[in-house]
Image (cartoon, helix red, strand yellow):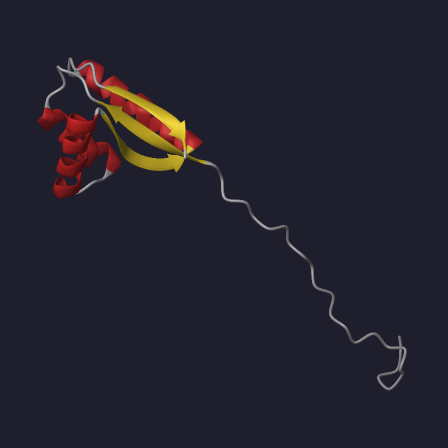
Length: 105
């Protein structure tokens, strides 16, 4: 062991460099307008599955109704796929033809 006064003694602290974390790619969950799914159902979906307030859900629903499509939320791939599957299943069980898709952000 080197003496504390020995000039050859290495006092430096080695720092480990961590690789920079990359943010995972994000995906938009898109609601598509149709002539059969009710506006109330779309608002309910946005509140229940996408955790939107009633006001946000109504605004998004009206955007989808007037523009033909709108973003329900933005998530990682796995979460977006799960949301699309859950909402599609719920819509079919409720007799609604609501179409949801996802696309890269």
